[in-house]
Length: 123
Image (cartoon, rainbow, N blue to C red; front, top):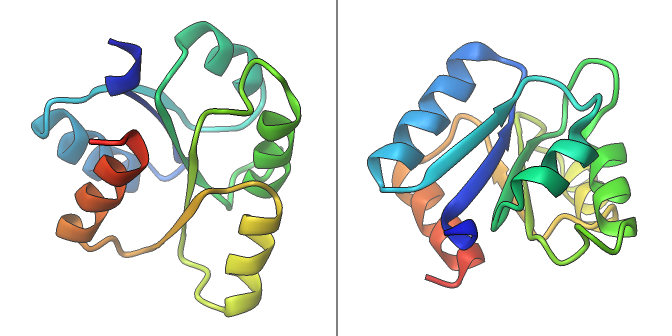
């Protein structure tokens, strides 16, 4: 089911593996990307119920990607949760202004992480 599919966009392999393991362990289907280039088309094809988006990506950064996803009628309704090691309030405000629906700080609190995912999926 598409609403149970989550797209994880994270360039750090260890962070991505942790997130994927947590999500798959909780029963979600996970799509993955390690960069933002070509992501819009992959999201349209995969039709996820949620996007977990690292803000620090090579090439196209997460803030720019969030803006693109929210500007496209085919993807604008998909919730986006930013994941980042940035801890300043300005960084959170910048992510939210770009269209992110939530914000998670790294390192991730696994319990809070899964609760945030469930909340944004409406579970």
